[in-house]
Image (cartoon, rainbow, N blue to C red; front, side, top):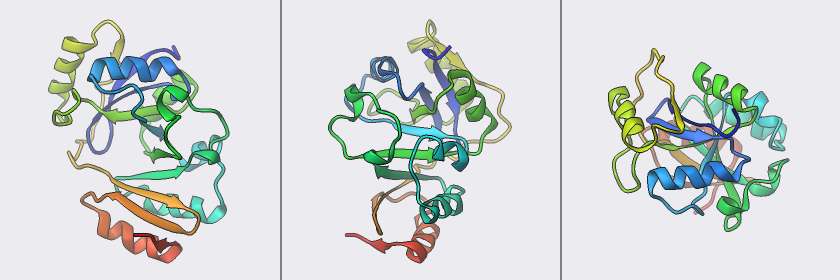
Length: 198
């Protein structure tokens, strides 16, 4: 099952992803979304414990991620912290990798099925609005990917429709790449651990 691509709800929007260590995942998703294949995708974990199995984290970085994961946040981490090689088709031109940690039964089940962390990116054709509605997600699946996607539909929590805040963490510094709706709460926590880098 590790070559399957999944459509699934996150906390913010509906996402699309598959095994983060397989090149085929990035090729399929770029074809479906009509986006560049060399565009890195975020990598999704369902817990910090799971994350530490794949990424070298200091105790303080682990604490920081634990404290912030409730705030619709994406972390940019140095690529060298990853214990396994990531597909060069998507990650050869970047020094950092975006990760999300989402305490979700759906995400955990997908990760268990593919036996690896999964990629995550918004469900939409590149340049269009991300999908936030389950009916629209099913329509997208039927129209663009009915032969190769599994649609997960049992979810008891609405997605917010927000964009996550993206923060790159490097050494003792942090930098915002995108400020989402909860960036003020996030910055309050960041200031306890790190220094702002303009």
